[in-house]
Length: 330
Image 1: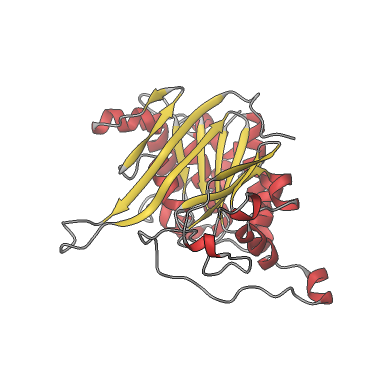
Image 2: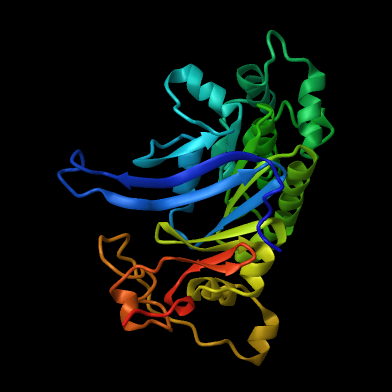
């Protein structure tokens, strides 16, 4: 099945590029973190951005949320280019695009109660003026399956568990009535026993509230469970994409295969782990020619170090950047 285009488009990121540093950093050259990333978020549809730590996933999330200025490229909301300027413009954009961060313990002010954090979100973004009634707060907590409300509203963040705090963070994002929700590694700091509950909650919100969801993760197994579409990212660029079923069942890029083989699998362990490349390239994004994965790739060819592979369509919306799927030049 091709990547769904019947879902209405909400947000489009075009050729996002981000460099950090530069002349202000003691004359050092800028450090590229994201290189020419494009993706589309649709209402009622979840896109997973998958890759190992340092691949640039969270930077993409912050670029889309307008927390970082882009070096090149643009973000379009309902076809209109986003230009966030000043407090009022940032607030209007935040009412449409919300982000849930990885660390629930750092997301909420430890000096304020849950009631204060949710009330402030409703007043800033939820169109509520004056006093916020208890029913609005109870409704927010009910939407994230936290109740009874009186058991949570007057607690401080340190009095809640990690899973409860993440639900409060999601409730605070929902207070703005967003169209786009970015979940940046929302379960990676939670106990394994409660991760599934958070993913089910996000899936239900996507379906019932017609949210356009971007799910950032290093766990391709959870991406297959949760997302409709998977984009695989390596060292700042997208290397493969397609439906969750296509990418996980028929991975085309060697890096995607490495991610899948690295996921815990008792059956595979019983019959012996496949040999995986053990060379790790930690040099960051360097201005060199060739495939960035070539130093770790078990299928590397001479052309892989000479030229950068182009995007090759594999059918059904599945694509990859790899010379294994195109004739190598003479």
